[in-house]
Image (cartoon, rainbow, N blue to C red; front, top):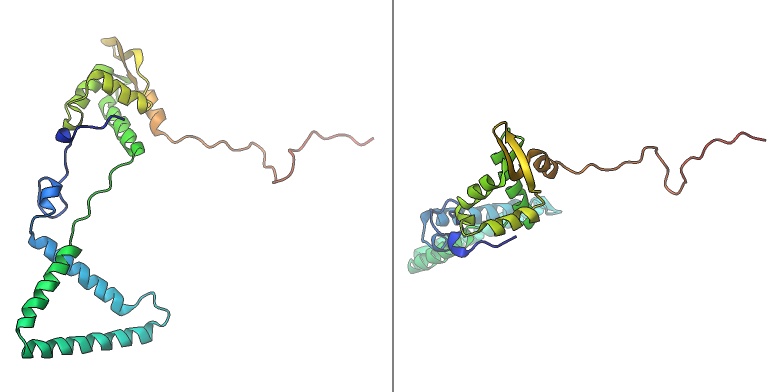
Length: 217
């Protein structure tokens, strides 16, 4: 399938961190990213404290709670004795929260998913009609920014690669016929799952099918 050019791709916004191109918005200092990173770190700390998958959970939870309590007491005493360390600790925690709150880019669709999207798009153009003219399909695809740079020949190649059959003459309605197009039956066949062939008679593994009965001599 032809790869769209970079300047025609519709880039999705970064989830929950503002709109715009992801490579810009992902590096923007945003309070939500710090908040998400803070919640992510606390969730990891809680999961480590409760020790859900630990074989000796009771003893592990007791030891970990005692260790966290000792660390909190040491940090409190150090903060009273040397307040400047609180600024360093807060800065280090903000950096770790920023790193933990990094937005995860969306997973790119596979080629099979892209083919199915094209077939579903043609199905939407069909609506309840028995067929749709291929010219209307081209116009609908070229109206989208991701395919605006594709000409008719490249769009025809996309349809062929998606397994869509283009008939030389189709009938859309009583007054619309005689032009090349795509039939609704072909699209339904592409979207419907392939039937699984099952044997008509149950045969045990390692045995031959039952033969015709033979009368004893």
